[in-house]
Length: 258
Ligand code: UGY
Ligand code: MN
Image 1 (tube, rainbow, N blue to C red):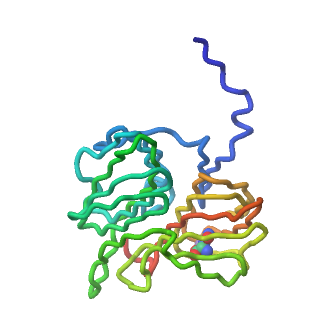
Image 2 (image 1 turned 45 degrees about the vertical axis):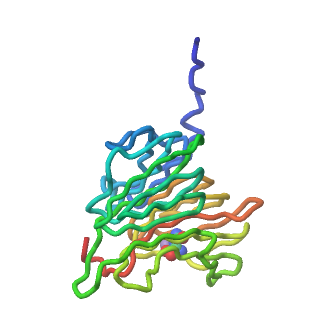
């Protein structure tokens, strides 16, 4: 069968962008990869330490029915897993967690994990992986398991926008925050943020305009943005419904450690 040629406007339709301070990867820009020990699993590599100054990795795992890890993975790293759609089973340190949309787990660097999809549907998992930055005098974090629906929505300084804090970052042992920020249409930040931390942002619903560096970009569901330290940033939510993104941020460290 003859396959039609790609449309000639493939370049002008792309919303992807790469600059020294940030990059935007839309589903149309993402490329399929595989990783050792992930059977029947498509991997979209989002952020890695190969870009800019990133100190974390973020991966979109697409688990076909029957997908499984052939051995424990993630050892030597702290890992955060968030189930975007479908269902999956996570096993770590002798515990089995049944994951559905919104289930998440933080596993410290002593706890490797196994993942499988026993259902007949595809499932999608976001995986954030990082070398833990220990601090002398602080105990290492314990695992955290939860579901987004059980995390309180705290209104931010801007009305009609909320933050859900998935990890107990009031404990300074934690060096990473995973937050879900939600916005009613029309809401925008009350400041252009500039901070020393970096972000990995996955748009879980809705759309908006992101001001990054010195440019405006249209952003929508399933886009990924990497923001380097000191990247100027402001979100302006638009559309008919609430927008929300899952945001990685390094926290509780002074910038000297790894
Ligand atoms: O907490 C934050 O740094 C967050 N407000 N940044 C962002 O959403 N780009
Ligand atoms: Mn920020």
